[in-house]
Amino acid sequence: MNKATSPFLKWMIVVACGAGLAFFVALALRPERIPVEVTKVQRGQVLVGVTDDGYARVRERYTVYAPMHGNLRRLKVHAGDSVWRRGDPIVILDPSDSELLDPKTKLETEAKVKAAESSISRAEELRTVALESLELAEHEYQRALELRPSNAVSQAEFDTAEHRFRITRAEVRASEFLRSLAVHELEVAQAVLKASQSPPGQPMPIGSPSDGVVLRVLREDAGYVAAGTPLLEIGDPKDLEIQIDVLSTAAVAIQPGNRVEIRGGNSESLLYGKVRLVEPSAFLKISALGVEERRVLVLVDVDESTQGQSKLSDGYRVDATIIVDSSDPKSLIVPTAALESSMGKFYAYRVEPTRFGEHRVVRVEVQLGKKDRKHSEVLSGLELDEIVVTYPPEKLQHASRVRFDAKTPRR
Image (tube, rainbow, N blue to C red):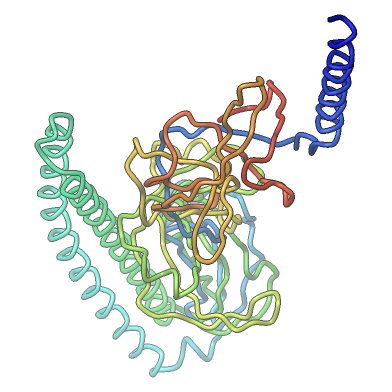
């Protein structure tokens, strides 16, 4: 009996050893686990925007010109100096004798006085109309603010009321600017008329058209200047707007009232604003690569609540993103870096645990909604809190074994 079973036991031992050896050889030769970075599918909002650079500029800028030929005295103001009161003399001009004796100049000046008086009347009428519109728009906006928490008004109706309020407030500001400019033109014309009737040698002071700060001195040295020569610019550096030039192909999606996120230089503070105007005409611009581009100017009003947080000033460069569309705030999103495209379709690598305590990936097709530079909205293919691979390596395939650091952020 023992002699009969001995060969069988030996054969079983050989088979078991061979199977064990084959198992360890297969285990040693199987592909190594691929290191990957992972993240979780989460809820959030995708903001679709048009990003481009622009610059900040003073909204209301006054340029002081020489009203007639003469000798300019050296300016005593410099860039950054404050003009405390409108009408303060900031430029002294000694008119040419020929200008004072020229009857044509006198007639032209008298016509300018009448034109300036008419401009003042017109600006006052526009201001009256703008104030009436502002009162109605502010009432509708305040009512929308009160009803918004209870969802008695839709988001579109609220945005319309807010946009109308901003537009009418800008119209009031523009009418006041026009009136101030007309008053300044009247004062200058009256000064020229008075100088033309005065004896030669009388200096003619030119007052400031507005309170504010000297932004730029265009002509500082004394010397002869011709009529119409720009001398300096005055404005309020705190009253800024943003000018952005975008490609005309992107401008078709931009509407007045669109929200804008603004970053100035290396500043980490984020400013917000609203599109006030998309100019109706495009212009030609040559890019840094020498490519001809059709671009459109977009003007943005900076929110007063965030404007004080920035050190932006006139002429400073900014990076701006104009939000033209957005997904639902509770939509499923994944980083765009977790997606790969093939034949017009998008795929993601979902990480799943195995029975042996390891992880493998499953390549799944996903349907996408709205996308921005960082995130994409997932309509189907993935579920909340599922783990996906970001920046998938080229050698990663369906069913590949993977490993990842437990400290890897899963955001």
